[in-house]
Image 1 (tube, rainbow, N blue to C red):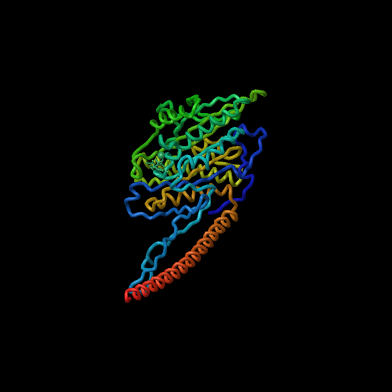
Image 2: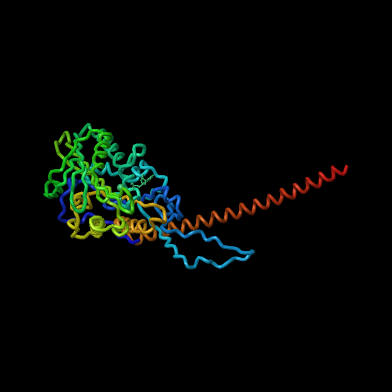
Length: 432
Ligand code: ADP
Ligand code: MG
């Protein structure tokens, strides 16, 4: 895992559409992108088949991919046998450090607390914000973004928090909230809330930023209303069964919230945008056993995910040229990435060895995005310091266990001796 120096890299965006926040508010550049990994619980299929856990969540910042299996020495007739596993692939044992790692037990509420909760205050300050759910099909992207009735996803929780926040600002600002729900499928943009077979065109102007011509905007007043909007939109998403998952999503679903704020005293008008994107599955096209149209879909998906990654990395490098035009997705999000924007990337993975390659690729992608925050030195050193701390803690614990075992065997010896003594006494009593 490599990383770049913390610093104004993200701000070095030239020729981009000016975000409304450029009018003065201060910002912490290093906090512009947050990368969080979420590890979902094993599903039934994974639980029933031979399973090895390949993601070991160490704590809320660190995970180990492909950890070493415990070395259990094999004894035969009291003699330790040579390791017969010499043909087995060596474990990678890769340590990754992210802004946050959410383990299997994390609820959507927990994920919300560590990801999007804080971006609402950035939104109120005038930053465009974007949230991406990245990962292979079946890794938990839609569960994270949309969730279920009992466990609503972060889109709902974020909107709930937005309405709550707006309420506290009502005294000095008027608000107008509009939402749109778009699908980017095969490099075409479709309105999920006003279905049509004709794709929509992207327009860009210096005043309004990126616009989707003819896109329907829906005014909502509560987070509950949002659930209906999302449900309606999701019914229109393009899904095709592939070998990887019967309900795999082959498109990127982009939910956008436009917050119009008018300051009561100055009458100044500000418009900010929050984009929440449920990305298409990141697995390789060949992994889904696809041919023809499905293969083309796969190639387009990989292209847009690659160009999203490239844009994020170039922004981090402080490059003057950011290749937004390489894909529809990045063109659409040009005014919500880098510069005066906050970005949260949630990389979803399964802990099972069944999806070993997908998980490895997702972690590598996430680690590349993470470099914006962590310097090469800091990243590696952090990881190693942590790891060495864990080794130390582990050694201390082992020492303690040995001490306790020694104490235990001493006291059991005493008990045996004492009970022997009692037995002797009993024998003596019996004799009388
Ligand atoms: P993706 O959108 O990445 O293809 P899904 O979100 O549809 O994946 O998740 C695949 C399956 O796993 C779904 O049945 C979903 O309910 C379940 N799932 C995913 N993440 C979790 C989680 N954190 N807890 C419980 N079930 C989950
Ligand atoms: Mg999905």
